[in-house]
Amino acid sequence: MATINGVPVKSPVPLSSRMQTGRAMALDVWSVYNAANLPADCINLGQGYMNFPPPQWVKDAATEALGTVAGNHYSHPKGRPRLREAIRDYYSASYGRTLNVDNEILVTSGANEGQYAMFTAFLDPGDEVIMFEPYFDQYLPSVTFNAGTPVFVPLHPPSSANRRSTSDDWTIDFEELRAAFSPKTKMIIVNTPHNPVGKVFRRDELEKIAALAKEFNTLVMADEVYDCLVYDQKEHVRIATLPGMWERTVTVGSAGKSFAATGWRVGWLVGPPTLIGPVLAATTRIVYCSNSPLQEAAAAGLEQAPSRNFFPLQLQAYQERRDILLEGFDRLGMNYTHPEGSYFALLDISNVDIPDDYPFPQTIHGRGRDFKACWFIAMEVGVSSIPVSEFYGEKNSHIGEKFARFAFCKDTAQLKEAVERLQKLKNYLK
Ligand SMILES: Cc1ncc(COP(=O)(O)O)c(C=O)c1O
Image (tube, rainbow, N blue to C red; front, side, top):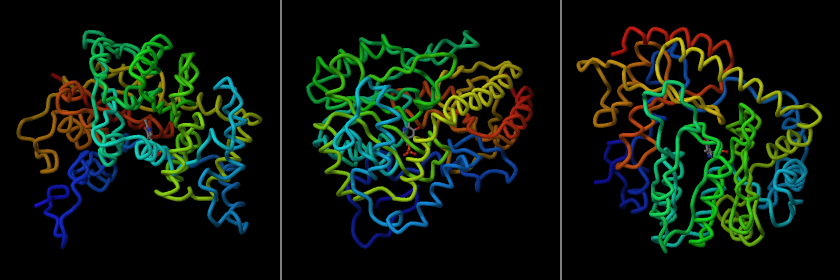
């Protein structure tokens, strides 16, 4: 009998077979480390959502939209004209072309749904989708629900001897990547800046990926939802802007990440009409359109961002948050990866000494050592994080088992308190 999270499903009819794929029925990591399962005063650096609101002027635009008639009704499946125009005006320069609001921009219900719709539009049973490990967990069921087959290629972490490694030290073995391509490869997902490593893919890396995509005639899904969070003067390169890549790339953005509004579920896709057209057809049949008032708010956000200097100021605030966390890791003396993008940092937890007889919950039995370490840290230190093996297929999960992911999309007061608590970990190091 099928089970959900280990509990037998008492459905009067059998579940669809796709529910047995993509870990859809397994207990997801977010539920294990849910606040409800942890001590009440535990600081949540696990799930990547902010503990602060979107900017007031963006929220005001949402309120204003709710006060209109049109703002409460269906939008065009392509997205509201105002938002598509705002996306064109804000992002065209970064693509080196004037984006066409009629057929090169598609508003979706969060980046997730846009990605799902792209898989629906292009995957046939057995088509392969290459993704780098660790991967954003939602990719897996989104691919398998659409009958695709995931093919994993690990990013290789720096050696532990290298205490202050950066996300740039997580490398691609291009022979390994080439070997992952096959005649069945339909798509490769390139997530930069990367969740959870924080890697900002270098131009030369993207050029090599682009060359393979062209050689094997595959599409590229460029997941760039953290494009406004690139630190240390690193260059964010859109793979869509490399020679010959616009034609085969769909780039994914998210208002949730850009405006600290992850619950709004507004995202967008940018690409050539030949790719955006089929994805529009799919998204129209999946959700018809994205919610209207928050599209208006996202439009106001992009319209006013330049005059308010919003993204540079937001970046500065995130850099400060990152540096508070990293200073705490430094004091701890543990190895970690210095992230150059996104709002996540990986701590190497392989030398945390976890007592064998510690009372772990049933939900993490049989999972990687990182599941135990994250549980132990949350219980003993009062800071929650996410075990990174969750973002791997079976073969390479041992790589992820060495790491816990800490999200720093939190205010500075909470981060300061978290790093003080984390110092207690010194008592539990091997
Ligand atoms: C890499 C990556 N892609 C996509 C998403 C989904 O974004 P959205 O909330 O807009 O659906 C996330 C959210 O965490 C993410 O980390």
